[in-house]
Length: 151
Image 1 (cartoon, helix red, strand yellow):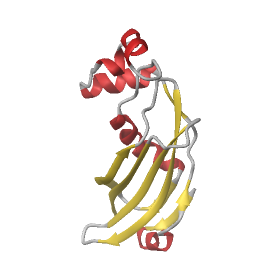
Image 2 (cartoon, helix red, strand yellow; image 1 turned 90 degrees about the vertical axis):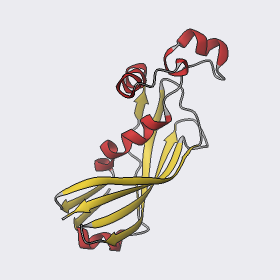
Image 3 (cartoon, helix red, strand yellow; image 1 turned 60 degrees about the horizontal axis):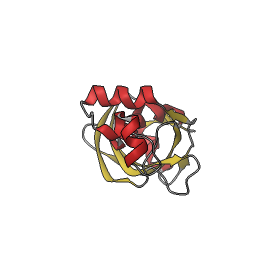
């Protein structure tokens, strides 16, 4: 866990890693709830019988964007800045979905502070995010997450 007092201190943590988080079970409820919320109802996320016949591994798979959506909620397990007002998502760079995530798999997040730049509105922080997939040598997701932390 990286615990930082103020936004000015963020630069001192560039290069530091945190994690992993607790394992997250990517179950049917999570996959189907995300699909309904985002209107992504493709069969390979919902149709278990067809997946058994047509997908490698024979199971429905999670949406890649589901993993991206988990990052902000898991971040408090890895990093906390005590004195700031709020955080705004700024974007993602170099997003790569490097392994499919079959239903009932478990994933966990690792994070590394890559950069922290002061701007006129706050501090822009860039973090490398990696989702490990339990039982796999390859991660499920690798990306750089940019967020603007407001004082």
